[in-house]
Amino acid sequence: MPASKNTYSQEHAIHLDKQDELASYRKEFYIKEDSIYLDGNSLGLLSKRAEETLLSLLDSWKNYGIDGWTEGEHPWFYLSESLGEKMAPLVGGLPEEVIVTGSTTVNLHQLVASFYKPDDKKTKIVADELNFPTDIYALQSQLKLKGYDPDKHLIEVSSADGHTLNEDDIIKEMKDDVALIVLPSVLYRSGQILNIERLTAEAHKRNILIGFDLCHSIGSIPHQLSEWGVDFAFWCNYKHLNGGPGGVGGLYVNKKHFGRHPGLAGWFSSQKDKQFDMDHELTPAEHVGVYQMGTPHVFSIAPLIGSMSIFNDAGITNIRKKSLQLTRYMMDLISHELAEHGFTIRNPKEDHKRGGHIYIEHPEAARICKALKAKNITPDFRSPNGIRLAPVALYNTFEDVWKSVQVLKTIMEEELYKQFKNERGVVA
Ligand SMILES: *Cc1c(COP(=O)(O)O)cnc(C)c1O
Image (cartoon, rainbow, N blue to C red):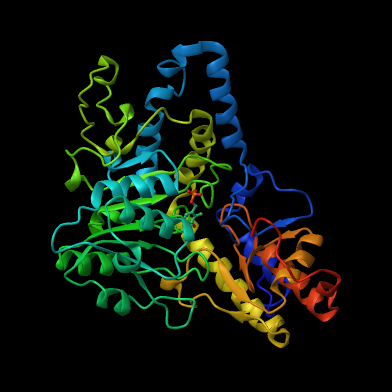
């Protein structure tokens, strides 16, 4: 089909889908008929490959009993390491720098316990006022554990516009008394990408360690953590990586920090061949594996094995390219079709600053989201007035984006949202 002259037409959306080199992956996912899922940045959808690996690990329990730790296609004892190696290209790390373990919150606790070493001069931790609450709670409790008052020792860089951070403001807070910096790679609301390379270089100039929360960037944008010299990073695997609800998370530690004991040790921090010696003196693993604590949650890792094979086949560069096209297309349609309806686009517009989702605000956001759900479109409401829309490269189409904006237009023109109460539900 030739390109339609009218870039706002449905024909144009269909034309874009025909040119999409990742289009074949959509049929690998479970997508409810006649529905559009735009919440893959909160919980990614189940793929057939992820389902298969989950069932395969159930089978290995069935068939091997305890021998499943070392037998079968995916021996449980080595799963965290082997999957970490496969995940390393997504963060631009070496195979021995990435491990699948814990959860975002647990991994942050582990990494701060390991890398926050206050002394007479350096005691403060720098974070930001737009960060996800769990990150802030973890930093506050780590400070308290070391005997410091979070009100004085946790510096939250403020945002001038309430949606984005200015990197110069962050650098201004990199003072002599700062020991550690923890920031998101992509802000969970506005989707702003922070310049990890620049912030890392500036932190290191001042002898400050720096780590990043990759929850909203992993699986949607490429990273070069080793090249940039980032000290550590952590993330969850259930958002863009489609690892399943409550799925096990991941972490990265730069190899320059290898050879130390972790802040929070457990028997899985051990060198693998020494672990079953049951010695009371830990022989720490020589790589990132040392940041594990206890027995891995095998069934909560299992779907990720299948999901990661999709990412390795599709390639993160291709995923990012399509994601940028989708979000650009969505912004264009929103600006064109919804101009009169009081929406404000709050995510950064530039490609190099925009993550994998669009963030719009509207005073009636809560009930607009309910009206969308009633029309089988799943958005992501963020209290009090935000709507996140994530067209995901692996399973959303350009036509999904076109249809969603059309439905949104109908909801506004016909005031269908007024049939709902403007208040949030329990989740979101
Ligand atoms: C999703 C998310 C989390 C979630 O943490 P869990 O430990 O998996 O519950 C934490 N931080 C950020 C920035 C997130 O986006």
